[in-house]
Amino acid sequence: MRIGIVVDSACDLPLDYLQRNGITILPITVRIGGATFADHRDEEATLEFLDAHVAERGAEAETVPYGAEQIKALFLERLVAEYDYVFCLTIARTRSPIFENAQQASFAILNDYKTPRLAAGHASPFALRIVDTQNIFAAQGVPAAEAVRLRDAGENPVRIRSRLEEVAARTQGYMIPRDLYYLRARARTKGDRSVGLVSAALGSALDIKPVLHCNQGETGPVAKIRGFEPAVEKLFDFTVQRIRAGLLTPTLCLSYGGALDGMRALPGYARLRAACAEHGVEMLESVMSLTGMVNVGKGALVVGFAAEDARFVA
Image (cartoon, rainbow, N blue to C red; front, top):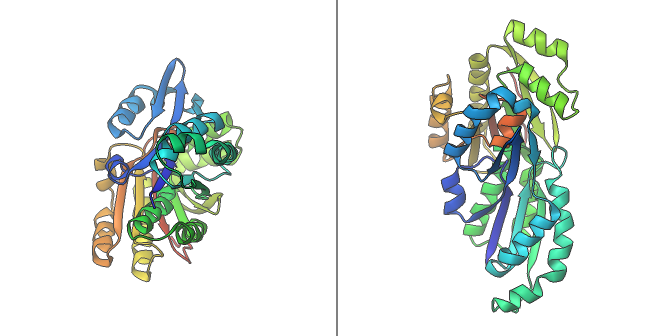
């Protein structure tokens, strides 16, 4: 059976990984003033656009995900002929309408797939499953990487579906933003009051950085640490502990709101990489999507992994 995997462009996985594993991208369009950028996970283009626009006006940007009609067209024009079963993994439905758009499109796809599929010489049924990863950015990549691993191991769609739902519920995403003023400005633009002016001003004045945790679609602070680099080092060391305790999947995903050399120079990174190598964990690193950087600011770091117990201890 030919199994396809689809993700939206907020899913932080390296472009070469996406291409090598035949993963289809639902691009998210970013509009800032008169400039428009369709995010296809091209890291070089993302960094160029970032330098040109996001620093000045990113908080005002509009992000436009694929709508139901666009998703339907992508499937009927291409995917129903290329695959027999497709898993479409989206950013948390609590943070974006992409999941709902894909769900809406799925009904029309399943009603209309027979004609284009027969035209391509396939008489067998087509099926798809929309999966809410319940997470964001690098942490979205964990269930997607597990889908690739299971598909390549020859697992059937029923087993993959069950496993993806299990992994999504246990995927832990951790983020450390650099600029709380930016985060607050962006939150206000979107009508999200989770970052108040007083906390942003106080945090910036004292150089306090929150560690934000996302699991099962819920995001909130779990620690406050003075200084970005000390916060990152504590998060990296915490992740090393989780790796040594045993992850639920052999994958760790990281994304960074800038060139990856900047992330690799952060304290604790070398220990994290060594722990992954020692325990057979694949470390997937990517430049954060433009959608992610628009929403959380330049220089933010996200770490994602699947684990049963992941209570952060600073």
